[in-house]
Image (tube, rainbow, N blue to C red; front, side, top):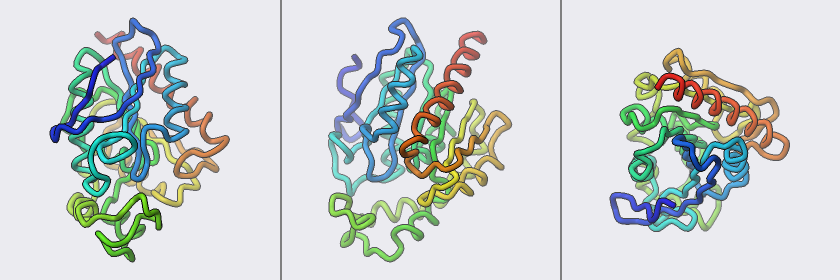
Length: 247
């Protein structure tokens, strides 16, 4: 429907579109986390849940991930912020909600803090303290030699580690976000601690809210998937209706 989507480097970004209501002028963009892609089961489930409620959804893989062009070792939060900008560029006629998981959540905070094209924001287990994450998860791995979580398909690059360190935390940019914002975090997340969401919520605008899902892990596995989908779809449906009423 939208043709090719290319980032500033000319790399093609793989995406899938779920139509929903063909007359709708609202759309949800879904971005994944590190080592993920647009086909993570809970992302697909969320896209389908949105479409079933009439809300169009576009899930995409950041450059270097999944079937998108580019090298995985070039993937950084900063580059993915630009990728998201390229996606927003083809959606100028839509009111956009961006949903980002984990590292994709940090991407959303940085983009939404200075890009008015995002009118609603959802963070799913969003990464907040990027430098701490890098040291906690990969501090014992040699960049450009080792792998993320011992996965040979996911080499750890110096560029990735440097970018996480330079960003440090996305708490400060969060204070500039004024659009409705939903944070969803699993109480049993052992990758991005739920404390990250509490820390960013403390600095966010009054329009932000946090939903904690008891028993849910980092990727909202098993029975947590439909619960997450129900909560997020209901929130987005209500907020898009409010936006329409205000126009």
